[in-house]
Image (cartoon, rainbow, N blue to C red; front, side):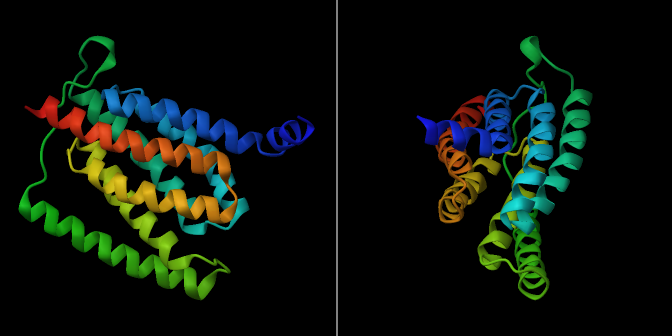
Length: 196
């Protein structure tokens, strides 16, 4: 019991970030605009967590999340809201041209972020950190636009991240990403059904 109490007191920032992130995930699944507020708060907590753990690309990603949370809030607000805060913006599928552009953006970001991490940090997981960061940037932009396939990217990114967080000893975050992976699968089917 003493070990658990010590772990909780030593990791309270990570635990708070994980709990706030669960609210973000719930609201995202339900397409409720409050996801952007909880995404913003989660990003602020995880800036510190990732910096402290040497996940420099993921730390930088949180700064992007702050910006995209503001963008998502305004974009979803402009579309109006239905009862319960659910955005009235319709779920759309990715168009072929848009998909090719997003793939190219992902590959470019992965290459650039990998090289920055390899050359300028002491990161032990540069290539994988860059991969999950690049995928997250693309997926979050797609979420802000309510593109269905963002969930497919999250399934891959979250599953890889889960392994990385276990490797780095971020167990509360690893549990969070296990939940993220499961909900990403459910979210894809829920949004696909909503799209019809």
